[in-house]
Length: 110
Image (tube, rainbow, N blue to C red):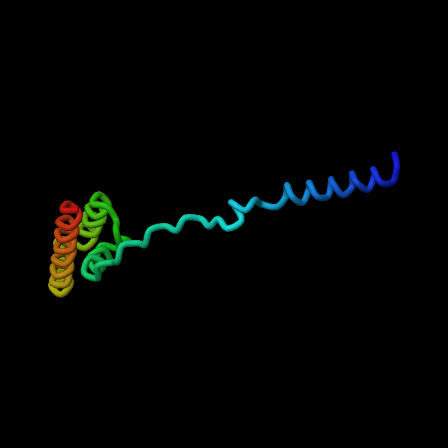
């Protein structure tokens, strides 16, 4: 094999490698799709979710489960011996029930 043929093969191999390893123009400027913006949080609903110890946007089933769990934990009947604790439990259960009802209403209308 002559020297010119050998140089030609080396140059061709080098050019084919670099061309194969570089992306084509179609993919050079490709950007991944941008996800849609998250819906803005309603501060009132966010407060209700926080009262039930849930992340914003939880579904109705999670809301109901959290409400039941917290009502069992803080129900006024569990604090019948101490009037001060019972009063606090009454207020807390009222807030939990209001949060549950508002979230239920919000989640069933959407």
